[in-house]
Each structure stands twice: as structure tokens, then as C-alpha cells.
Length: 331
Image (cartoon, rainbow, N blue to C red; front, side, top):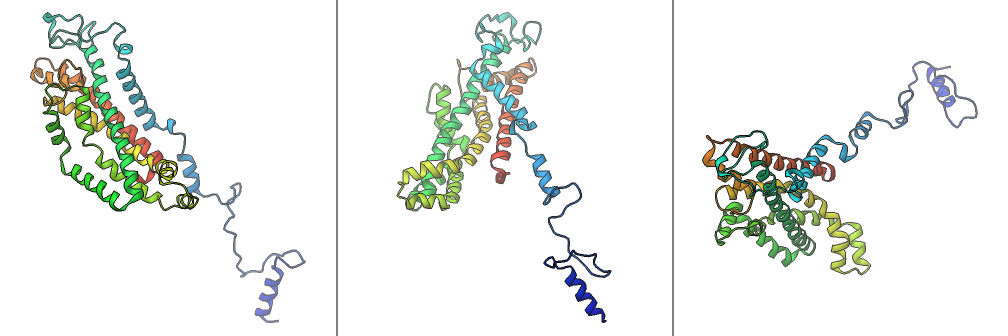
């Protein structure tokens, strides 16, 4: 019998439809191993890459960066809302001041020392968180609402609506943010927290509108949006029900990242004498007052600078943690 005939008979014997039990293939005959087969004790279809994904993914609140930044943000928000919890329930930044103790360094009873007017500097720094963080939160919230509304309208309707909104964004981009805020703030004789909020919110929405518009352009042609239109849903219902909820997460992450930048902008404007004015209390005002006493009383500059840096860093890391979780394409 020829070698070819023996090979064909061996192949027939390996046919799974054959009534007889399969036999051990002869030497030289190659067989294929199913792709789903794994190593002993390993489930079918298991790969190291899938295992790595399952291991790396976990609850957001257990990730180190989110845990650390979230703790910082929570503490700073609590400090801004209830400064008495940190400085004492009867604390007042302008009470119990003694001009004879001006610029005293840190010591017993006064961990941050005394300020220019002889007031407890620790109490002043704690109460300074309210104005700085309030400006960052409110300006970001206003920018978020404007960006969501205008971006959704521009991306959904297109045409002349998109043209008008896009040209308005171009005009806002053409003005330097800090310079435009300085011009607006110069129009007010007394600059309060709400004055600074108005000036910063007036020019902080353009980037968010562009971001929201690009997200809406990706969503508006999806199947569920087209089906809603075919069923007779109005434009307003489609935008509220489908467009905005499915496009809002990237914008929310972006605005969270911007809170730290707004806090820094307020402190910078106040430091150069354009932002908040007394009797307001903020970290920017404390830094502005301390620049003339850097060599004689460096603690006046160090402590508000540390709190400002930690707050901005906390909000930035918190926004990055949210971005990695909810908008991985934005990394």
C-alpha cells in the first residue's frame, strides 16, 4: 500500500463523524489545537491582557490619586463652608488683635504667628479659604452651564446657529483671559467676591463651548437619536433626553480640572491689586500684604502660599482622576 493511501486512511479515522473512536494519529500527521484551549486549570478564552484589565480596574474611591485628591478637596470645601470647625466656633479674623504683636513669628497659641495688624494669622488663613474657593466653584459652575447650553445648541442644530456661537467663541478667544478680566475689574471702585466672579465668568466659557460642541457632534447621529426623531420627538426633548446626558461627562471633567486655574487666577489678580479689596479675606489678599515683609516676616507669605498650592493641586489631581475614570480618551 502506498504512503498516500495510508495517510488518507489515517485522516478518515480521525473524522469526528466516524462511528468508531478516534485513534492516535500516526507519526508525521499534524493536528490543530483549538484556539480556545488554554493551559491546564485555566478557563477557555483566558488571556493575560484580559486578566490585567480585570486587575487594574477597581472602584474609583479606592484608587490612590482619587483618594488623596478627594480628601484634599473635601477638607478645603469643608473649610470654606464652615471655617469655625478649624479655627474655633468663636473665632473671628479681626477679633483680639494687638498692634504690639505685629508680625510675630509662630509660637504657643498662634501656630501661624501674627499678621500685620497683630491678629492671629492661623484664623485669617482658615477664613481666607472661603473667598478663594467660592470664586473657583461659582465661576466654574457658571462656565459649565453656559458651555453646556451653547455647545449643545451649536452641535445639534449646526448651520447659522453654529456659525453665530462659533464666532462668539472666536471673539472670546481673541481676548487674553487675564487682561480682559483686569479691564472689567477696573470699572468697579469696590471689588467684592461677586465682582471678581462676574469678571472671570465673563471670559471663561469659550473653551467649554468648543468641547461640548465636539461631544454633541459625535452623539447627534447615533441610532437612538435618529430613532427618537423618527418617533416625532421635538428638538428640545431630543436635546434634553439624549444629547445632553450623553455629552455632558467630558465637559464636567474639563470644568473640574479648571477649578484650580480659576482659584489661581483670583489669587493672581488680587496679588497685583486688581482683584479683591479689604474688608474681604482671601489668600490672594494675604499674599499681597506679605510681599512687603518677606524678609522680616516670611511666615506671612509661606502659610497662605502653602494652602493655595495644596488646594489648586488637589482640584487638579481630582479632575485628572475623574478624567481617567469617565473620559479615558481624553488622557
